[in-house]
Image (cartoon, rainbow, N blue to C red; front, top):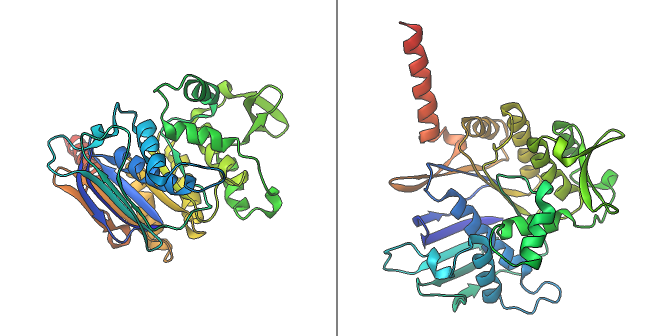
Amino acid sequence: MIKEIELHNFGPIQQLKCNQLGQINLIIGGNGRGKTILLKALYTAVRTLEEYQRGNEPRTAAEILAAKLYWTFETETIGDLVQKGANDPLSLTLCLNEQKFSYQFGEHTTKSIQDLQNKVSPRTSNSIYIPPKEVISLHGLILQSREQQKIFGFDDTYLDLVRALRHIPKQKKSSHPFSKSIDSLQQISQGKMEWDKKTKNWYFKQGRKKFSIGLTAEGYRKIAILSILLENGYLDKNSIIFIDEIESTLHPKAILKFLEIIASLAEQGIQFFIASHSYFVIKKLFILSQKLDSLNIVTLSGNSDGWTMENLREGLPDNPIINESIDLYKEEVELAML
């Protein structure tokens, strides 16, 4: 898994350094602090390592990374990612199982990266980025805009995800290492998503009944994404999963069950990076960190003073989400006392 990260001048992130990341890493902070930027920065680096030297891939790691940054952040030039007014170049370093991957470039960089160092062994596992909006109902539009029209609109996190959902399963569910988690995910969504080869559409299956995607709640479709990726074998115990705004479209009860499943998957080896604005998410992960001794949950908090890192096992972090919840409670008490 990713054990260390260091970023400098990456968009709004002036400096961030963490050297004891956990199986679950919660990223919180106000709007504009760089939560999504951080997730995408790490994802593009990891996917570069996974695509490099795989199959018949002819490109160098630097070429793969440059394309990944361009299509993930959708900027005119990748040099636009450098923090405005910074005197030093943008740089990113991560250690994956003690092996280092790093790169840097300046604001005048267009589409090529010259300074890249890679000591990481080729990865056979796949990682994935799950955006706030589900993609199952948009799969055709995403493929058309990116593969045929080659235009901005749906970035690489969406394209990679749509392609991953169509991955061909290699083993039966009965012998699947994540069978319990798959069953639990399908219980939350009250069914499962299946691909119809004839109509080339996804549909929702509940028992023997089939429903159109449009008749299925978006929250269920979002949960189904992880279920599909586990069941079809795209993800394994060495995968890294990035989830942006995990609470989006989900009822609090579903969020709590979803996090319990994520904790179970983390105990099996999968690493998670989760961005959230939800008090429910922070509180549930805090409770899980107290109950599961083997689970290391780290909080990365972005605020006006920069980024801080804390282990949830040591207590809830001081952050605006919890502070606002406390303020609301105080306001409610004051009204009750009038």
